[in-house]
Image 1 (cartoon, rainbow, N blue to C red):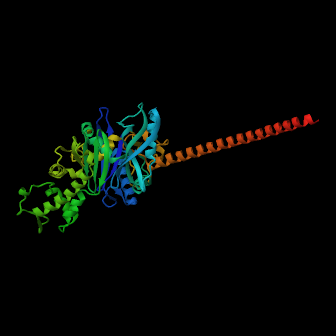
Image 2: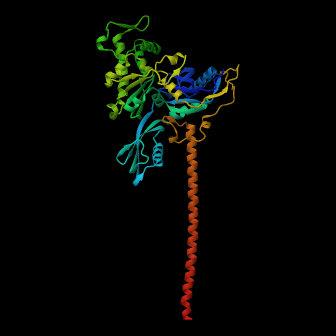
Image 3: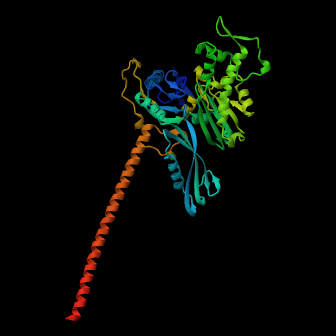
Length: 484
């Protein structure tokens, strides 16, 4: 029987593209209906689309396979945005006000709009996290209703290279897969693996991926810093491969023997680890290679934590992603950062039911795509797939579904969107068209008003000229009368 009400999310990762479909139940839990994965190492690097054609084909395959499992067309999908070059930049907008002005919501919205319209070379603003407002000399989270003479907005702008942003949108447009919503993957992940207490008291979320490591810093329930480090588990694998072996063999050795931290006294100098039937490597040498690269990753993670929050992390460090499965990874982080409170988030906080081994493994590798699934709130089901139809024949089996541009006919303002939601390129283009039309109409009104004022001034000048002429005639006539 075809599923008629479900949500679909797609995560484009460095090692694999994952598509997942799930149904939200009345009790708040989610039942996973289908999971599809495809290798992406040849066309996605460090979370970035590099080969558009291969990515388009992969997305189309993912959607077709999900449609086959669900026996239903997929009308739209939720997409995660992440990968290299995502970074956060602080920005301050100041507005001087007349003394004793009471701050209104419109004033706050104006600061947000000014910040959103900031221009960064080759960078796209994906989201803007409000840090706090400074009302005269006092910091406030909500300044509305407070009397002041100076209002300052502190924002954290999350940027991504425009090329990467456009390529991602182009891939889904070309694959004819409509985007219901784009989410910042690190924020969707944080919402699903962090507790309110951790985000409020201060914590660092570290997502250890294949090609990248994402660092998110929270304090007082606000995102304070976001960065993506171009290092991940694959770097360790490549270092092991330098021992003259292919990467698949190096990956197997990493998973079997890899350990994040080994006390020097526990190393057996006589132990040899087999590479194949004929070769082996010294245990100490293997440990030095693995721990050397991992130490570099941890150092880069800790470097990303702003100094003003380094001693405020009462919530500790939360590790997730595939790299968090390495033995004693928590000891390695504790040894370098001296943060005692370290938790490994192997699954999301929500109740997820599934028979799929990728979900039931609870190894942290599905947390991001599950976070995207949790965010979904629009039905992604399309028409029921007719029976006895080959979904992979390349022929259209049903009329085309909606396009991304059709889903948001009226572009939303940043204030209308939830934190972490990214406008699609189609929505941005529509919003820009509306702004341009509004500017043109405003310019036209101004021109018409200027023309009207000019016409009134001309009439006034002409009237004044006539009055002066009449007055002059009267004076001339008055002067002449006595002489007569």
